[in-house]
Structure formats: C-alpha cells, structure tokens
Length: 303
Ligand SMILES: [Fe+2]
Image (cartoon, rainbow, N blue to C red; front, side, top):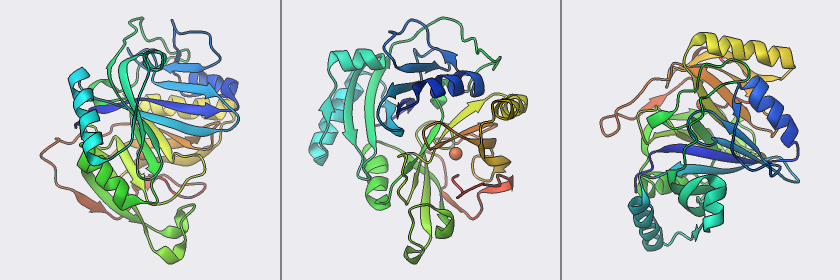
C-alpha cells in the first residue's frame, strides 16, 4: 500500500459556528460551495470540495484523517493487505463516500486508536479559491493538505502500522522531555516523536508517544509566503484567538510557523517554507531540538 497524502480531516465539535468563524476569518479558508446545508461546516483550501469537515456533536474532538490512495485498484489492493494483516476495517457505503466527496473509502483504526480512512478518487470542485480574508492560497497538490501529529501511546505498534502497511517512510525522530508532554508519566522517560513522509512534504504524519484529550496534537496548514503567516498572526490578534506558540523556525522541516488554538482543544500550525524530501532517497535523522529560533510554547511543546 502506498498512501499518497493527507486528503481531508474531520472534526466533531459542539461549537460548529465557532469553527465557521475560526476557519474562514482566522485561517482564511473558503466556505465550500455546492455542499449540502446539513449543519456541517465545510472548509475549502483548494480544488478539493473541502479539506476540513466539522460535524456538530456533543463534544470537541478530532474525528478522522483521510489518507488518499492512487485509485480504485489501489484501494482494493489495500483492502486485501488489511485482510491478510488481520486489521479490521469497514467499507464505506456509497452514501458515506458521497458525503466525503470521494469515490470509495475504507474505515479503520490504527493500533493507537486513531480513526482513519483510506480513499480514492476525490471529487473536485472547480470554482476559484477565494479566501474571505485574502489568503492567496494554501500549499497542497501532490503534497497533500498539510500534516497531522497524532497521539500514539502505543508508538511501536503504530509505527509498524504506518510504515509496514500504509507505506509511510520515516523522515526523522526525536526524544522529547516528558515534562513537556501532556499525558506522559515522567517515570517513563522521554516521549518519542516520529515524523513520516509519503510524498515530498517533509512529513505528512507524526506520531507522539503520549495520549491527547482532543485526539490530535496539531494540524499543519501551509501558505506560500512569510507575509501570509504574518497576516494570519494579525488575524489571530484581531479576533483574540490565543496562540499556543510564537513564530519560529523548525529544525526538521524548516517551516516558519506559529501555533494557534482551535475551538476543539488541539492546535493548528500555520506556516510556510516547508522543505521537501525525496521519497525513497532519504536518510532518517534524529533531531535534538524543536526549532532554530522562536516557537515559545505557552504549554507543552508540540512539534
Ligand atoms: Fe507540525
């Protein structure tokens, strides 16, 4: 199996209207046209029908990460691989696939309990991307929509699942001071933080060896210039949205970014300048710092 990128995410929220405001006025996503008025909030970043779906619910929590495969044949092959590996999954109904705006999907959990979906053939929506606050565009395409950092207390099993089954390759690893990681017992020593690529984006996935109450450490979205990051910082200030970390540059993907708190208890990293790797021709390294400069975290760090 070869996952090709992060296609979409879903979020359960008791405050979907807060997400509509945050997503369009702070992040600068476009309200997605042509989708049903069904109480969900759909945020569009590019030519996909949506990239972020917020479903009204009783609680605030990350939903699923949707990982894309190359086509129908790749999805059928993936189903066979899951079966032979003994990984339970469900095949989405045509209605569920239509709701995600994809051809078909499989639904499953990783060994750490994170819900994910594998899909093929996203249904495009070709209206011009027009951000309500003037964001020129988001860096997506073959790089996928960004990256997610998922909690994975069972890191070894999750690592084997994503690399051995889904085709992710390790980019780099880090050992994080347990005092800086929520839900990590310091007696257990440093928490491992592993970064993985599945396309030239430096990492589309990272796994943190810890739990997380919201089910997601952060989602990263990328824009195409430093000025877009600066304008986003100004929008956070104008809307009184709390930052989780100041502007900084990461040592591993070189992204210049800041972290902002979403209405659902996890962060969005908003950045630019992420470097690329060459899949199949990359040497995994261990990093020993989160950032060259900046990224002063209000709470625990979360690269
Ligand atoms: Fe990140």
